[in-house]
Length: 246
Ligand SMILES: [Fe+2]
Ligand SMILES: [Fe+2]
Image 1: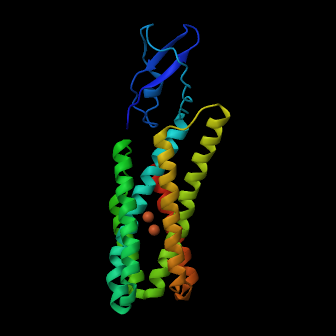
Image 2: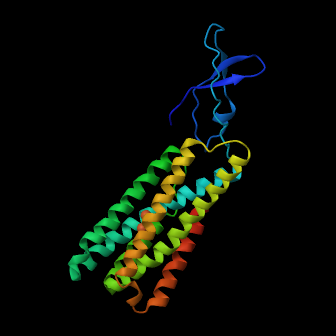
Image 3: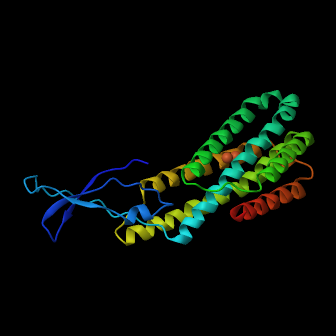
């Protein structure tokens, strides 16, 4: 978090005042409310500086939304790395040409996990208490679909990414609503929240790219396709719901 100094025109006193350095953590909006002002000496320039827009302060419900979202995202990315770790040796043994693709998807999941590990540490978000259960479930899911063959492994990716992609999409949509509300009020989102929005969009697009790779690699040929995909999607939705709270 970069503190910054901003000059602001003070209409009542006809002077400029410097806003003290702020810790702009959008999950700790109290930092935004306790601004300290210091009058600058009168001999300094009175040239008008355009005032920055006020920052949009999240309410309790919005902070809780982000808290849950970051907890779920971090757990989901951990699960994704474990699924690929368990699938890859089995898939590439019989289909060596898939090694670069499996590595590419794993590397992206590892990058996502690092991102959310950093975000939950920075914003003091409690990780899910279900960690050991999700670790075991993800490893089992990866191992079992890998053992069923390439098509089943790809059907697993298709099912997981369908749920995760729409989960990220909901988060992007929600933050865009906040952005629209901020604009209506003549405010703007905190820079960190803007960065988070860009990160969520990028990760969503990468998840949907994995979904495309899975379909290109015959996920629809998995046997039995429908029950397998339905069960995995239901499992993902259940894990998301539980991790939002627990
Ligand atoms: Fe991911
Ligand atoms: Fe993914």
